[in-house]
Amino acid sequence: MPDATFIAMMVVTVGGAIVALEADEIVYGAIGLAGSLFGVAALFFLLDAPYVAVFQIAVYIGAIAVLILFTVMLVRQEKWYKELPARSLSKLAGILTGLAIVITFTFAIISTNLSSDTQIQNTAGFVQIGQLISTTYSPVLEVLALVLGAAVVGALTLSRVDKEEKRE
Amino acid sequence: MNSLADFVYVSAILFGIGIYGLITKRNALRLLFAVEILINAANLNFVAFGQYLPFAAGPQANAMGQTFVLFSIALAAAEAAVILAIVVVAYRIHHDVDVSELKSMEG
Image 1 (tube, rainbow over the protein chains, first blue to last red):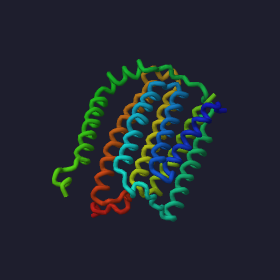
Image 2: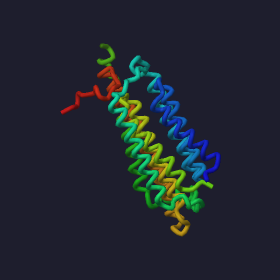
Image 3: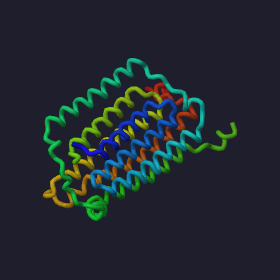
Image 4: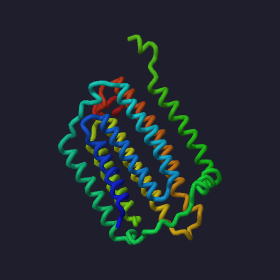
């Protein structure tokens, strides 16, 4: 049986995800997304993985959620707020597909013995994570640095406004 | 005590919500939200299975789930930055954020 903290954080996570997609104004949606990400970070804490949880809070809530909020607020136009009505057929298809996925996964989990696995056995902390990152996966780290640099340069190039364009 | 199945249930629910958003929404920013929710569902699975791995697998194997999630979070940050830039450019050109109206690259 899950404890009360887990149930509360599960409600925050799932509720935030629903608010992110269904809120009328997109600013509230962005705040709901931040709440959902925070709930996932709390679940990481419950999983005894504090390093990943703090990383999640720093990167997702400190960077991505704030970046989305700034984009929405700086480019403040009517159309950001105009809610595009979903076509009724696609809405029905979306709900059915989502429900089908959840039900399929639920039956798959019930048929296994995952629910008897209640003891967190991992004692590896950030020492082991640091060793893995700096030895076995050091090429991944360097490629990741390249990807991040390329993404930042690409984003800057994309959103740059030329002088001629500005004068028009 | 929380069992491994509880975390996998939460992950499955998040995944279903993300797929629902990807299918129904037409606003480009909502699609970004849906993709972020999907990535989080995957990350939660990674950490949960890594933490409940038997101790006999060794300390390196035990830390692997968390290590992959760190890489995944960094990639998601890069992806969000590029998608937001593309949305801003698409809005400047088409004056719309409805992805079903962005047809200039259609073959």
